[in-house]
Image 1 (spheres, rainbow, N blue to C red):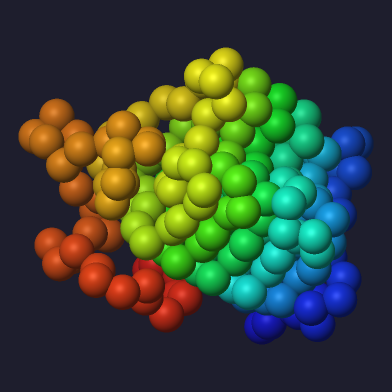
Image 2 (cartoon, rainbow, N blue to C red):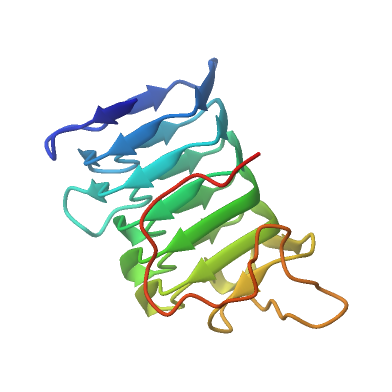
Length: 194
């Protein structure tokens, strides 16, 4: 099922006292000042979903897909492709907690920082995540504002550049969903199998 913002409105808003789950959905073409797909201040759980074509309306605000403002976000088995924001082309984590596992960020962009993920003062944990072909003026894949937040490499991550600091060394093996063939172009959005 696809839920679209029609390039004119944000798709979902999660208030600070709410818990919201997204499962097996495609969220597309959201447009909002922040968090064009989901503007979150509460608890957000995302699984087996695809996010594509979402963009902050001015192109300079946070979170092309998800803006996490002092909230908690968990993402698993999901794909982010072709989204745009000011900081955090896909996800912006501001003073919150973000956990991402078994997911792919490809072909996302940011006008300023963090083509895939941007963060200020929060805590972000990544496990078995692929970040490739994302772009930004600064830090194409990941951006951690002046190093003031915490980024935890829980293993199995791949960063096509160096902005996330991941490697394919034996101490950090390829994600379980990595096929051994590095993508040369942004893949079509698709959720990873469970």
